[in-house]
Amino acid sequence: MNNYKHYLGKKVRVNALGKSVGFSCDTVTLTKVHVGTGSRPSWYTDYQNYVIYLDQFNPFSLTKDELEKSRDSLMTEVSEVNTKLNWMTETGNKEYDEDEFKAWGVLGIIDSSDSKINKAKAIAKLIKGE
Image: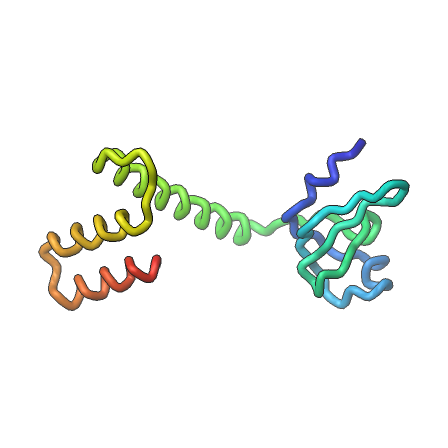
C-alpha cells in the first residue's frame, strides 16, 4: 500500500487533467488525505477546499529562494525554542510558562542600559510575541 500521507502539507503543481476538472490555479497545498474503500486516493486542498486526485497533480519542485526562506524560518523557530530552554535552565522551571517567560524577558530589558524609548519598544514587541 502506498503512503499517501507523504503528500500531506506538500505544495503540488496542478496538471492539465486537474485544470480540466476545475482548478484555475497552478499550485495547491494538500491539506487532508482521504482513501475510501474501493476508491482512489484524494486530498483536500487549500484551494476552495477542492479535492484533487493523484493523476491531477505533479510533485512540485522548490526553488533555491523557497528553500532558503523555509530554512530561515526553521532556524528562527529553533532559536526561539533554544531561548525558552535557556530560560527553563536558568530559572530551574521544569515546565514552560509563556507568562513567566515574558515577565523574565521584561526584567532583562529593564536591566539593560538601553534608552527608555528603546526599552518600551522592546517590551511592547515581547508582549506582542514578535
